[in-house]
Length: 171
Image (cartoon, rainbow, N blue to C red; front, side):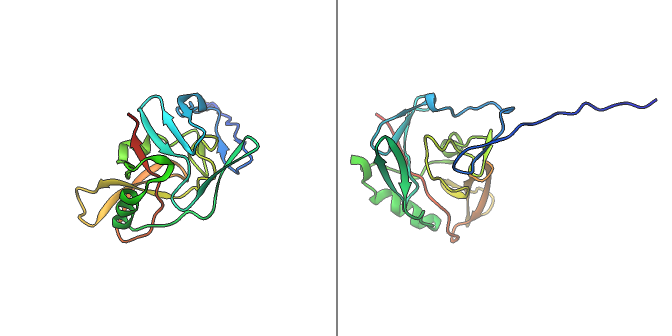
């Protein structure tokens, strides 16, 4: 007796930023989850966190109703990422910090890749690795990152250069 296996068809759509979306995976990071503040920051209504829309090294731009993050994303060692966050006073706040693993993972969009983030909310985000403040408890010179190419998490050597997105607790 021959058994036939069901075939599942996935339809994947691409957006203008070359981001690919799989409509068969639930979108946990839709635009209505965020208050887009209009000043280069967004507030996550689920977590209460305020995020910078641009990665460090980029500058937020708003022209004729279109927003973008201009410039080149900067790479930082883990220690330099912490230092950059403590001296950052962008958007009128001086309490920006490096997010922990759970916080940064909360904005990863697993229904999309290249990058695995909502690019309407976080425009021009590269599909690259971003540091968290969470150190590895197994390897002393490693810390956790979120890979926004596919939304995965892993550890990397702290002296390697990864990207940074800052967060603050919105009071």
